[in-house]
Length: 259
Image (cartoon, rainbow, N blue to C red; front, side, top):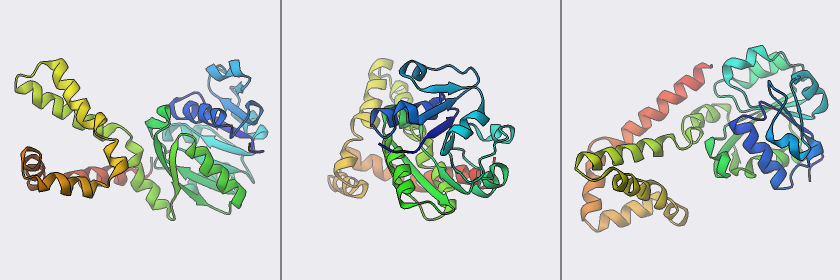
């Protein structure tokens, strides 16, 4: 169990709540090493003994690490004095330099989990601006591993790009499922069966990617030269790779401009 006291501003929101619960469940933190803040001062974890406050300044004073789990447009209104402390930001498009200037933090960790923290299947890239001890780096890694997989990246720009890739969570799979469903319905397939078939492709087949690389699966399926190969070839000929690349770049451009 870590000696760090983690304060999560926005700690009862989607990301903050998921991370807080996972950190407790994994044994990384005890209830007396976790402080949350929100507008009401209330939340589910209060019943477990976790302190929840409406005062962000009080949270900062009580914590050795502060996590910002708020929307980027809310950042300027926080007015935090975190001088000499480590601030972990989950905000897209807010650079570490701006966070340091506004809070006085000596170290800023920018991280980008996604909505899959709820089921502890997020991939979270993170970047450190400043000097973080080996022990504190290990804590950050374990914190994000409590909600899935995590990796430190060498450049801050990588966080901005990955905000538009892994940070989107289920967005692109959801769009694919919707397209598959609507296509089947247009062919006269009953709605309920169309949706189940689409989810079988997007959700049911996904675990295969944990066993084989995407390249191996595509190569094996193309080798059959049958129905699946015809569909894959049509997507390739239609510029599928380029379309996906353009979508990621569009999101990354927004992140790099700042919010």
